[in-house]
Image 1 (cartoon, rainbow, N blue to C red):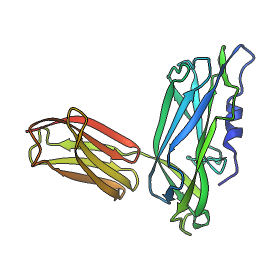
Image 2: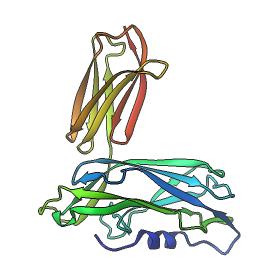
Image 3: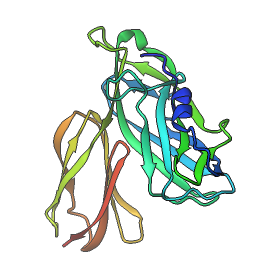
Image 4: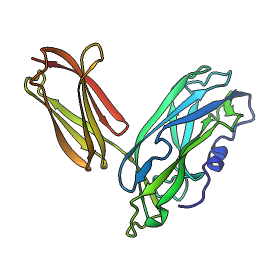
Length: 251
């Protein structure tokens, strides 16, 4: 992985015009992956970051939050360009103490030489080059990382680290209404953990199953319903960081 630092990349993007500026203060914190997590080569893992505006100036819907994933302070390249890949979140107004969540499933495929401890995290900034431009003037809280362990890298991997965003899909849940058995058809963009939860209308869990780690591709989860009372329920399918919750009727 090239040592192209995320902070430097975002500093260049954050350069502003000579017009009046609004000073924003973004703070990023991290909930996943937790410290001491093992990230296995080729296996999806959930990421979760909270970006909060701790400044006194409102972030406008015309502003962009730019962010880069990082390993050991270097920006991750998702598209093979040789430079850190910058992602954007737009169209969200953030007054003081407002937050947004950045949740994505990722996979890292890496060479065995990369196995071992690393710092995985994110750096964020605000970007708006227009008149009345925005700038984050406090950078000490713009970067966060947790110490994790990379495992399972192979000598056949061409790149030191190859990063990609995983797309998981809940394809169908049937039948609805259901009687004795409920089927949930899913498609995993990479191998990863899957859980299924059934809740009553009060939000109480009446059934939970951890399917464990499942391989990439399509799967059909079969959920027994024989002991369930007639009525409406919520089902929740979690695939890594992807969560889908919908209502279903059991008769």
